[in-house]
Amino acid sequence: FQQNKIHGTSLTSIARSHILRSNNTMTRRGTGSIQWITALALLSMRTVTSWAPTTSIPLRKTRSRRGNTAAVAMSALKQTTGTSRTTTTANEADHHEQEPCNVVFTHTNADFDSLAAAVALSLLWKHENPSLPTHVVLPRGVHPVVQRFLAFHKHLLPLRGFKTILPEDVHAIGVVDAQDASRIGRGQSWLSHAQSIHIYDHHEGDPDTNEKDGLQKATLLELASEVVIDQVGSTTTLLVERLKEAGICPAPHEATLFVLGIRADTGGLVYEGTTIRDAAALLWCLENGASQVAISQFGVAKVSETQRTILHSALGKTETKLVGGLRISSVLVTLEDQYVAGLAQICEEIMDLTDSDVFLLGATHRSGSGKPKKGGRKKKKKDTAQNAAVVPPTQWISLIGRASARAVGVDLNAMMRQFGGGGHPKAAAAALRCSNCPDLDDTTSEQPSPIADLLVLANEGKLVANETLGLAISIIETQIPEQLVASSFMVPISQIVTVDKEITIAEARLIFDNHNLKSVPVVDSTAGNNRFRSSLKLNDLVKASRAGRSNEKLKGMLRPSVKTVLPDTNLADLEHLLVNEGIGRIPVVDDDGILLGIVTRTDVLRQHKLYDESNLIDLKLAKD
Image (cartoon, rainbow, N blue to C red; front, side, top):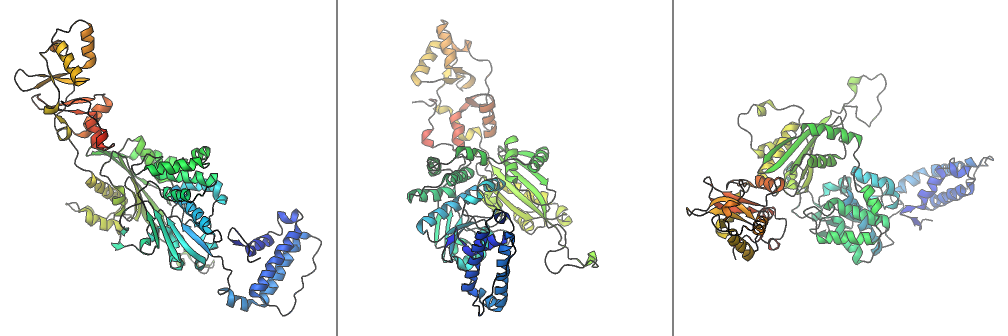
């Protein structure tokens, strides 16, 4: 019996569970014989491992009710274990049933990418060594959307809890989507027992530094025997590539989980860090049976009633300001008691609704409820309330940040790391203590404190919540580069094809055809200074030619008013003209109306660095 394991669980445990269920459905269905078999199996194993009887212990005669069958067996077991209790206790530590295994840790508050990567690594190790089971352990908590997936799929995944595994039985430890030992919670204590440690992550960067106390964290990188870190959008992608190379075909529910993991960390392949490899890995999972129906059902987080209440409250209090052409929004909400899961979803919803480029959500909550401490001896009823040890509640603030692709230069990960948190450049979070009341000495200071000094106070929990949130916004503002203006990236007048208002429509049509133009600025060059008069479009020329007006001068058909901008017009205002007013080519003039240059859609696209520079071709505005 001891040589046979079922999913890493010994037959001893199975036997024990059958006996404990003796008065339940198995007995009522007339399966008393199965109860006897399991009882005898347990007795036989106890006999081998911890009991050497000198006399036989007969089983008592039972009544006709089969419900007592397993109870009698357990009673006999108690007699046997009681007879040699001293021997069993003395040898229990040295003779515990060995269950060697590998363990893969997700990070705390596991998301889809972390869970999917852990399951993929367990499949890979199972393929390499089928005789050694690999278990996935969730150190502490999961995202609400992941919790919903686990509610339906937990039994299909190789999940185990801490209490079901002995640290000394662990051969290899895998850590996915994390490089810091603190990210695996109490799994840190198991690291010293493992024969090898393997890290898989997609976050590039230096080892994490704890800005709260200025000390270098004990990183897994220092202990690992294998480190796989690559710049892809998802850790799941790294493991899926290895499954593909090994010829391992996942089950449909596993392939579905992998797709959810890749989608979560790449934003459905739209985040800035997404690569072709992520798309290829996702496609491979779909080819191997990933369910589109399941993806649509579990890939979208459901907004709970509590989240909806917080969202409604936060929308009314959100503050927005324009910094360097970017809309920076923030809000501070107060939770009734403990932390509410799913704040990241609320942050993303408000960011979309407010059309913000950067959004920072601060949520205050308490840790500890002011109730007597648990543990120790129970107080007698005559004890007074003053004698009970009370845990004072601690005020916390959770910071969740999101940034759009337009927020060039904003690195939320770098900002949150200064508060002891982290994440991605465009999505990060942190949690730290805060004060319940402001420090009067700080608030009465005439000169604002430097950011470095405020960071020390914040990480010591001496700032109130709104001060901590304001400090985070200030750090973000320092990351925003000085906003570009029209004169810094416009096409200068020397490179632009222009036409004079005194030429004929036929002459203008010839210039358009020679240069393949759709629009040109019209200037008055009589004074020799290229004063801007209007813009001429190809459609207007075609209509005039068909109307028999080819010999007329251009000044008779010019548009009366054309929008122009000054050289110091910022990029945000230029984008407003392009998007909201549909102007594709914006003339740049000085205070006297002299044409200096022109800003096109292509010029604006270049500033966002959305495409390779070689792929951006000017719309035939430059001279040959």
